[in-house]
Image 1 (cartoon, rainbow, N blue to C red):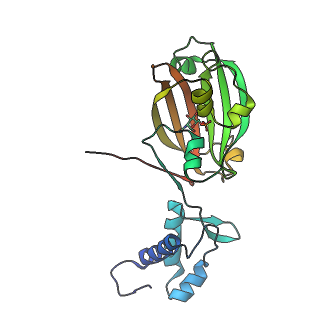
Image 2 (cartoon, rainbow, N blue to C red):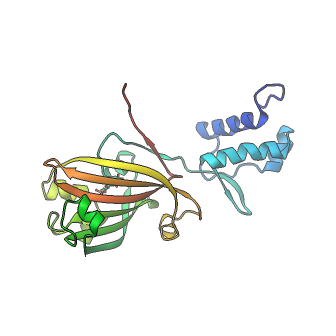
Image 3 (cartoon, protein in one colour):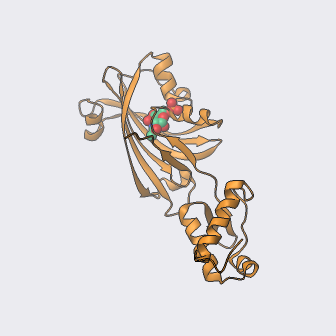
Length: 240
Ligand code: 16G
């Protein structure tokens, strides 16, 4: 499986082998892979070479190291297409996963300048501030803070919020969600987010902001979320 006479560097060949074992399911998420020493002995290559291959796969998020325990195969990332304006609940159900939410904050607060601007409200107008940990099959995927006008979306309850906001807005209130502008940037998880997302210090997250409008143009929500970068991959269809 490793050809030492090949011009392809050995670390690269080893990376390819491990990648294939993950793709074919020979190595499953959570599996412990052989140690650097074991690979080195088995393949008769240097430990440095093995370390380089493994480090590259760790940096890519395919493997992760645990101090004193070894290196394991990571969970496959959830691939989400950015072409549809869908809710978290819809996305998880479409994948056959069970959506869930842990409610952290649910209150009506006066809008600060930024939130008021985004929602086209006067500063200090009452807005819902809803912080939820979004779960897929009970695993935390994202931390989400939603702001919505309390005068536009009436009668929210804890039960609605721990189920689906979009479902309530469309099916119960009969409002039509139209479009959203979304931005995405990378960051390191903050200490405040870490216990909720259950990721190690320094883990990467994707910060997403969504600004959603109803079909008639009324601003519906301003949402800030941190998605686990080790569990998410976003795709987009582009046409020329
Ligand atoms: C998604 C949306 C969020 C929306 C939520 C509604 C992003 C970045 N965010 O998480 O804007 O409020 O879905 O979800 O996609 P729900 O209907 O499950 O409550």
